[in-house]
Length: 281
Image (cartoon, rainbow, N blue to C red; front, side, top):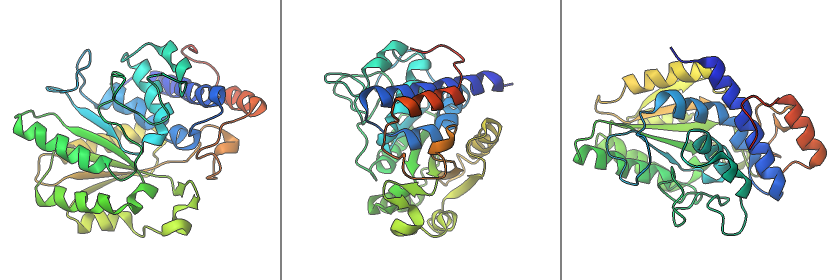
């Protein structure tokens, strides 16, 4: 059985990492990162089958691709705390010559990062290609990916979504972070997506909904259901309903913290709401 208390403690520590990283350089994207902390912690610690060490081929293990690369703070924190690189390297976030740039890059060889991401809409295509490579290699492991709901406004997604079902890419679990917000406001105000579930189903995907996307038990249950739907001739979409800025009261219920760093006073308040659990870097 999963140690859910450890996962919760790790999530709290990851939130602290996110806040401190973004504050230090007065730059970055805390809102979506905080909203996806529970998902990343659960994915890397309970859901994915990962090899010891890291290589770009990723043969014999599940792979993850982050499409909405601006939420790199949560990605870097979870990778570091999952053993991919030293936790104290989080101190270098967004600094010149750092391996931890604002959007993930590959040219510096940061373990855990398989693609450069941040140009929204491209991750679905990459994940599908990786899933097809798994099949060609007769590797039964799965591909996981994460996408923003605002990101679905990019047309390339829908070409890829159509392709995945037509080619029966059934070893892919693509998760959409449904927080209803993007940099310029509510997604419904910027460009309403309508019924996202119905859209994916119309493209012949299987859809699993996680209504409480900031609850670790709900994530465990929902992702187990998603995994059970693979291998049946259809790609799987998980609709993960999260709260942007989750865990920090003044960052929740608004898009304002999509890409804004907290000042000293705000950082102190946010950290007080998330007491240290596993040690700061």
